[in-house]
Image 1 (cartoon, rainbow, N blue to C red):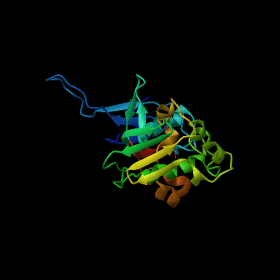
Image 2: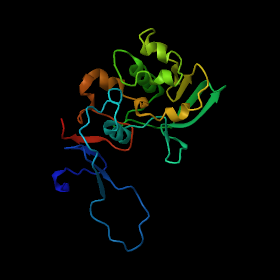
Image 3: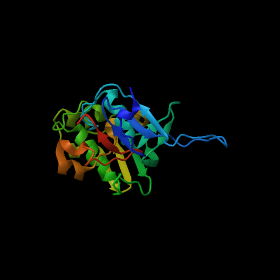
Image 4: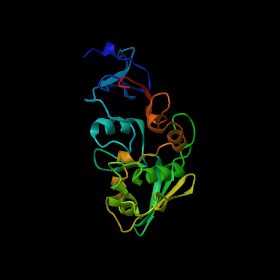
Length: 226
């Protein structure tokens, strides 16, 4: 596969063909006198074409590999299995059932607008809603978030999910019982926040490059599969 077939755009995720991704090389310690290539890029072949980039509509690594580059959740899990802060800078819990997360100051979408705790609340409600028909609708219930299972089964309204915005930068999550895996489960791609305004405006077309806003290190610039 020849790299010249791809459009290389600095500091963005470029999706073309089999959804190879062109991204800048991460900063590294370069020995003095080392000659660097003019373009610092990494070309990664992701395999087959993704069916969607909506985190609530997909379930395979083909999509989630890309979604993880575009979006961040509250935390991530390091290769060593350590919980690392992402959108949340810190958290605490009461009796291992009520968890409070504090968002990093100044965290924004790629268009510069603020990411708030209410964005996370709305996104998780969308995930469990039967109207979304997400393959991961049962996931919040598996995490033991209050009413997660009942909402996914159509027995309660999404607004009753055990998550609330205390203020713009503070999120509270209530569990039905302690869950030792709760923090690690938070790193799942289906739990990243999404922009309600964007999805309300564009519907299923919100993931197109000209519409999408992201919270991670990269922004979608081009998707050749569309």
